Length: 101
Image (cartoon, rainbow, N blue to C red; front, top):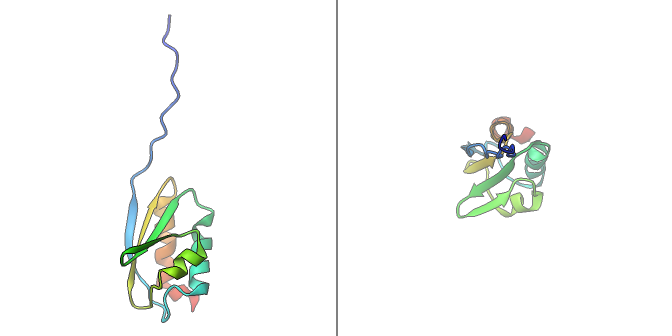
């Protein structure tokens, strides 16, 4: 008799992270925080933004604003999940564009 089939294990992809320079003048204020949150919301990824000793869920505009990350400083973006690489790429692209400020 054949052994019963087992469900495939869901493998969690490696973590993707990047240091991202906030190129806009005021950093993660309301509009840039909202753009960042929207840019990763539709992706299959858990994204965290770190500044100093603080971290915020990238899906939360208020949490991102609470980091008080000013322009000219770097944040660390850490993502896990199927779309982790794309999530980090999108945040890097937003920062490169100065969050359209």
